Image (tube, rainbow, N blue to C red; front, top):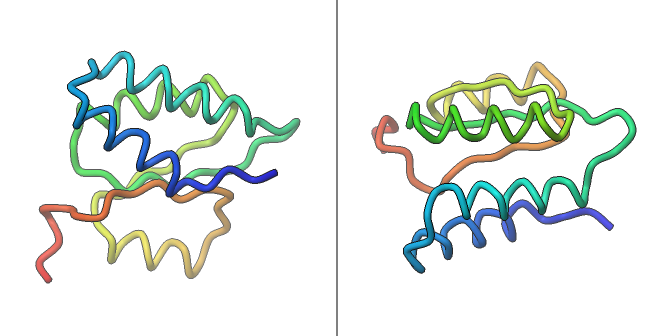
Length: 100
């Protein structure tokens, strides 16, 4: 069974809405990834512009065996997705650096 990362993002969002600490949200996200850990975990592309969140996501990905790559906007992410293979894409719906 493959975990929908929309579900993960909903869980993270709900954690913020419920005023959970970043540590609790990080723990929940890590637990969700642990459920999906494979023998040879793949690459993950993180699209994020918050240095605080990047730091936490990197710890989670390294703990779960994923090889993280980071970009700070959707255009760069799209370009990378066209030329590189990733098992997982983690992004938010709105990124302040994007001018749309």
